Amino acid sequence: MTLLSKRSLVEQAVDQLRERIAHGAWAVGQRLPTEPELATELGISRNTVREAMRVLAFSGLVEVRQGDGSYLRTAVDPLRALQALSRCDLAQAREARHILEAEAIGLAALRRTDEDLKGLREALEHSSAHYHDDLERYISCDLVFHQRMVDAAHNPALSELYRYFSGVVAATLHHNLSHAPRCQSVFDLHGQILDAIEQRDSDTAKALSRTLINES
Image 1 (cartoon, rainbow, N blue to C red):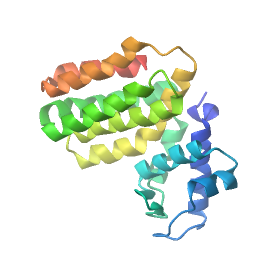
Image 2 (image 1 turned 90 degrees about the horizontal axis):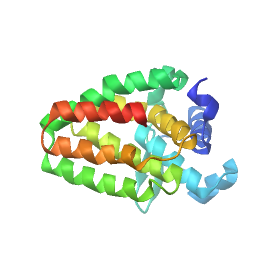
Image 3 (image 1 turned 90 degrees about the vertical axis):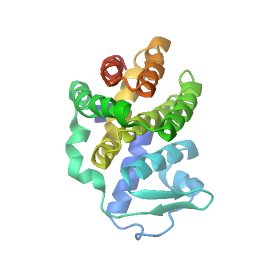
């Protein structure tokens, strides 16, 4: 069974918006319709539109300007080069995360800055507030935390690869957390990984990351 067979409403909204972009609905640099307008057009909630726009911003298609709206950044979807990701099954997605995410986090433990740590603590706090609450909101916050861990490796190639891969991570989380109760001990691994990064303990950071990937 592929991840796409268990797509969330957010993923479906992302697909519809990508299709419109690919067909030239908006010009590069053009301001996109507001969240209420898109919600009406797509027949979905404003919250779903908001989360979909965040995914598009992560992928580099859309630029969200605080207080001003969302603008089309490029009409060429960066994810097309990685279309195989959407066909990953759960085991394949886990393998890819081990290779990309765990190794990047090991580097983050060696290269992180105090500013990285500050951003990671803030992201983890936001994620923690939603772990036992709204699933879509939690996944959105969790992706920010994981992206910031990878970013702390200070390797632009790894950061961009993981940004492209974030859709698969989101789908994996949605599938697993929808089919099993949320376990606090699994979430607590995030804090333990952050502690290892702060202590510049690369081996422990990688080991904990692999445990989290296997259990989440």
